[in-house]
Amino acid sequence: STTGLTVSMTKEAGGEAGIEAGALVLADQGICCIDEFDKMAKSNQDGLLEAMEQQQISIAKAGVVASLPARCSIIAAANPKHGSYNLSKTVAENLNMATPILSRFDLVFILRDRADKEQDRLVASNIMNVHRDEK
Image 1 (cartoon, one colour):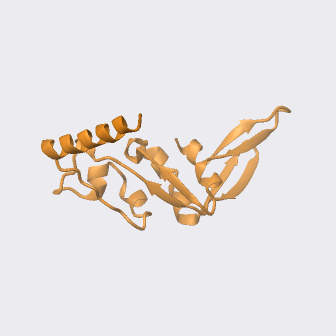
Image 2 (tube, one colour):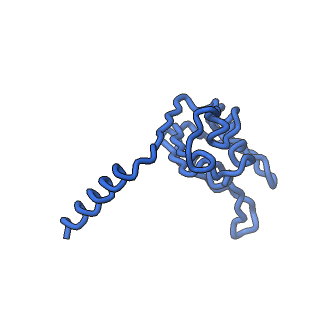
């Protein structure tokens, strides 16, 4: 969610409002990895725009006004809609991602898995053999 990635409000023991840093703030001057980016609601993706463009996260709620640094690189992984990449569609259409958020990434790599039952069988067999030998 956006709050888990950015910042959330908390209620302290004395009844005062506080803020809790999310993953992007905690990753300041580092790297934040986000998996299943395609499953994130569009409203949550939009909440990342400020962090990705301004390298900070602003909050103004319950009398708390703050700007927290979020100077981090984001590595995000997403799966294509319907399970396979359609070469006749754009990256944004394939990933169910809005163009503004996609444009914030400096690099976009498309990794395609071509269906090949024999190759998949060989890979699975090798993995099983490697783990059998570990005992």
